[in-house]
Image (cartoon, rainbow, N blue to C red):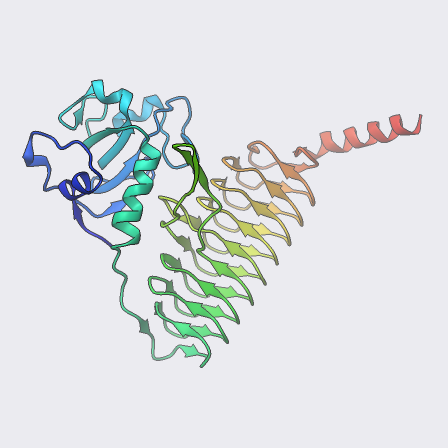
Length: 339
């Protein structure tokens, strides 16, 4: 957690200070994507009102119709919106404490996070429950609950929380800002919470995106050997309850997975995918980013998902389509090939 005043942020980042000093002592204690931000959060908007997700990372966009519901303590917006702002306030965003026009809202958000989150965040002290079993070779700096098992060479970094009854078998690495629920199992080599694969362009340079929002995993989930779940940028990567993942599964940054998800070996989802409850991916299925996989969807092995999938249907092929359509297409192609 961190706590910083609005005045300190503006001064440190060399941003325009309001003439009304009464707004400067406002306390900011968190950060989030715009659709989830609260009154004491820092967030950003890229200016793209045509989509719900904005630019890279599925983190900054908002539809024009959603302006009235936007809440934030500090909101970075494009400089072209300065004409709508008076001393840090905007009629377009009545529930935002301070609206700050900048050249690049995305870069401003990254700068804020590096200065005020990565460098200043204070984590809870190490706590290991008396009933926990921790192997002598493990390194535990986070919080470990009752009846947990931490196996050989596991690393639980400061700022990570492991719920009661969860088992880390061997060589499991849990990064800061990761919260794992109860009665989960992590087989050898699983990594939870590393920085996601994200970059953005600013002033002609490609820059890495910090992913400081971590990961939240529910209860009774299982992860097989060498799975990876990447941390989110400004909102955590989320996995619900009763989800099960085979070996070599990748869940990228900012994804939001529901309950009762099943993903077979070598399947994966790119950044910012929303996967509703009861979805099943067979072996080798890969999904592009910024899509929604509807409730109860099943995808056959080796399929490639390039667009959002409707709930309750079965898909196959590349690009993935409803399986009956795919089967007829395959038959026609084979018949054409034999002529």
